[in-house]
Amino acid sequence: MVTQKTVVEAPRLAAADIGNDVGLLLAKLHAAGSVLNNKALGEFDLKERSFSILTLACSGLEPTQRELADFLSLDPSQIVSLVDELEGRGLVERATGKRDRRAKIVTATKEGRKVHARAREAAEGSERVQLAALSEEETAELKALLRKALWG
Image 1 (spheres, helix red, strand yellow):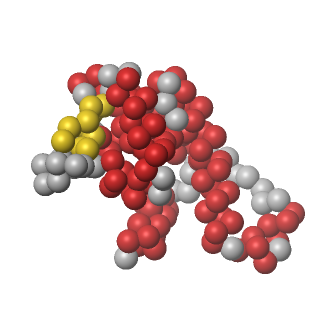
Image 2 (cartoon, one colour):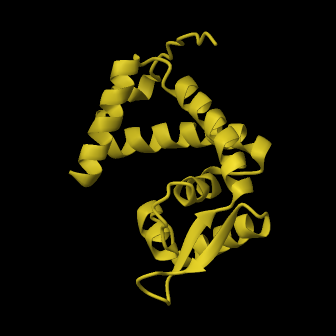
Image 3 (cartoon, one colour):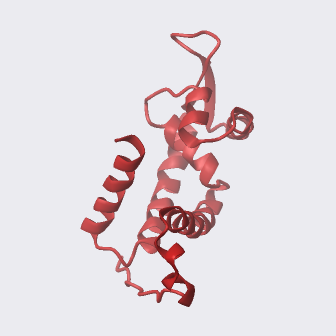
């Protein structure tokens, strides 16, 4: 598939000092990406948050609900609700934690892995559209810099 690079002209207000504010730039990039992702994931009856949980459930890392909440910066009650929804659809299941029996591990079911594989392709397509102005090397560098800023 050939993707066309689109040059988007910066709005007039981007010339203000706030146009270089990392928080604003990240927020705007995230907001635009969320619209694209949610549109692409809608075909699978998923949104970014539920897709993120499904992705982590497919990771083989056996995340607990608490780890999901911490990693995704969501309230634990939001995680419970999202996992309930995915579990109700047969995409994930909860198991008792191996180290802490009070913890609930979230893992993908066979059906969850199948849905995730197709939804992942759609999400990757959205990312390519969103970052079309960047080369592959620039995209990789952006991701590396963001990871470094977050986790050192």
